[in-house]
Length: 193
Image (cartoon, rainbow, N blue to C red):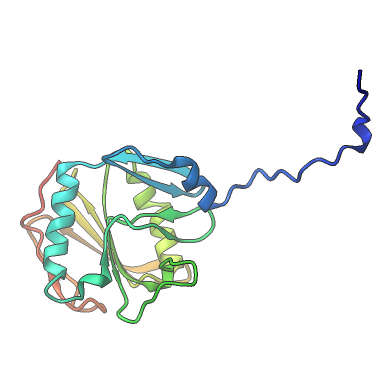
């Protein structure tokens, strides 16, 4: 029989804090048809919906003639501070943005972010994600809500908040000419849920 002196066992340093990389690793593989994000350390997994995709596509079609294709991304992970690994529905990167040494885009690379609301993630889009985008200085943040048929345009980030907000009903134009995007976004093709 072997006797173990428990006073002399060196325990491994175990931290309750997981890195975003570790959390995303544990979530692999993500089930097909689902989007996974980590918001304030909490995992959010939501199914992709037709309405959701059609709105993203309608926005993308309007951005493609104006901006280089390699500056437009969808569902690509970008870490927006501690505990926040987002995969924005649509993001436009600044023209001079380049991946860092780890092969990732950084929050300061984002010039425009569009999030299309899902019932299960709406609170995150309107709350912590909006706050994280403002804190990162994302110049233009657009929330598209197919449940109420409305867009909320947030701009002029300062001190961790957006100081300008525009509410636009579906069917009307979202005027981005006063922002770095400098275009008018048509919403008449946005479907409702």
